[in-house]
Length: 420
Image 1 (spheres, rainbow, N blue to C red):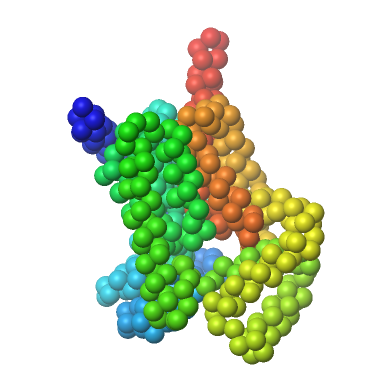
Image 2: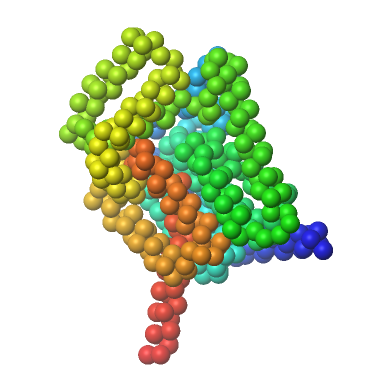
């Protein structure tokens, strides 16, 4: 009987997916979003090529070249950035077309996947009107469109996280080992572009403990956790083989953790304390590298320790700084510019999302999964270093709740109009 139920659930999901993909409303929404993005890439950027201070600020193009030459995986002993996205950039660059243009096309396609995922989620969990509002809100978000012109991982993060959230919903509705394995694969890919999500598998396992009932609960949780954990631990073994030191993921988070918790600079890289910050950072690096002879892993660990020392030295100040970073996550770019634009824009999305969460409640899995995923990332970046860039990955989920709020307000407006 359990097998039949699983087969029925899979069939129902297949029919539901076909219904969405053949929906005229979804097609129009997707076409509208693609039109806006193509106009931005081929229209706006052609007339205003200086719109970006940088296109590849993180150096992914050079990493892609290193990957293509076989250097990135086999000559690096310590990864500053994990190789998943550099590999994608490398493969994209094989085509005989301008690399930046190809990456922008890739960004548009991946962003379309994120849009499709939130539409499917909202329609499945709530209703089609909510899905349409959520989709249009995401399609129209100026910061989402702006980031399409850059070489960055945030767009891929948003799509993979939306896939994970949708996968978790269908797994909780009809738990099966096969769905758990698929979700584990998606989660692993996500963790290899966003290491801040390393505790997310635990959060989703907790959802399964709460919402999944039956004899196979532990089996499903094991099928979900085992592949992801095994792959991550195997990556640690790879790091040990090439560097002689065992560590998971990469060696990049320590600097951000120390900067975000340094109360002397208010956890900021920009602002009036910028020169002081640069001097402090350079002094630390010179001391740890040249005096203490620390390896990149040792340096990363030491900067994490320095960040913890900052917290322990003044817990009250650290708590106040944490609250500031909760706000910066949503509203403040790292450059601390354009606040006149980002604050009202993000304020609209955030306030409508909170209203949508209030209307829906957060007890059901349909609301709990996206709500606590958003809360997790807001908190995890507030513990370390936070700016508006890091909120991009959860904006599709924010749009789900905003869509629910606008759907409710639209329905009330229709009723009041009918009564009048």
